Amino acid sequence: MARAGGGATPNAILAHAWPPDLDPARVPFPQRTITTLQRMRLWDDMTQIDNITEEDVAGFWLTGPATVGDLVITGNAAINWHHHEASDLAAALVGEEWTRQVWRPDRRFRDLLPPTDATVYDIATIGHHDHQRHLLGTLPALRQRLAQLAAEPSDEALIRYVSVNTGQSRKRTVVLLQQRGLFAPAITGSEAGRQLGVSQQRIHQLVTQVRYRIEQIQPPDGARAWFPQKPEAIDIIRAPARVRARVSPTLSM
Image (cartoon, rainbow, N blue to C red; front, top):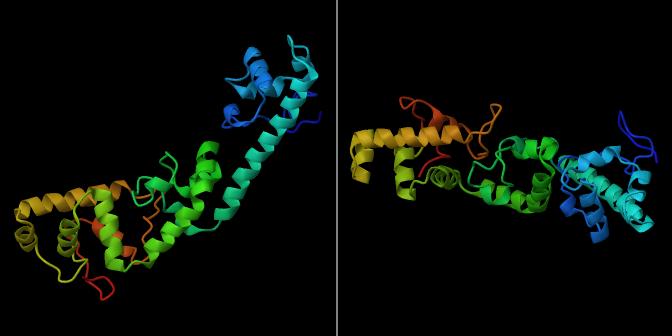
């Protein structure tokens, strides 16, 4: 059997190397094949099968032609499916800038993303196969979520982004954004404290906490969080406390 890849064993049982992130438990092997793989001590590390030939399997204790055939046909089909699925995901997302801005630490998307702190782009291109499969399954819902968030008025979208990711109430979020000059009317720290019934020092602490949290959940590699309505608002929140925005008509209460 021909085999791709350097250092391949002649007549190896599979045509391509077993991907390290392909869990054999996800492959529909018959039980007799699973038992053989377990007895050959391959099941826990299927990459070892790259050095196994059909003759090795056929010569193993109580292994018949049907098991060899199952392993060849089902194993090769699983590897092809693995590669094609990953390629399909990457092809579906290539060139879309949002993929570098959306990741699980941003709680607006946590329920739709696999359990890994990687951007959608990194999952699609270099991620673990289980995470790619998860993303492929939720991609339609993720696109719908993006469209819904993009359609929100800019003020509502910013309130959602900050409150969801910092745990602040809506009222507190609005006041803090006013204090940062992102909503009209812009207010001072003392006025913010009066509205929330806390001291000006406490307002300073809250602003610092929000700033820290928003900074922590920015995507890697210098990307800015996905906020299409007014992306510079994220920069204002992350800026030192002395930097305040000039409220524009497109971002006001």
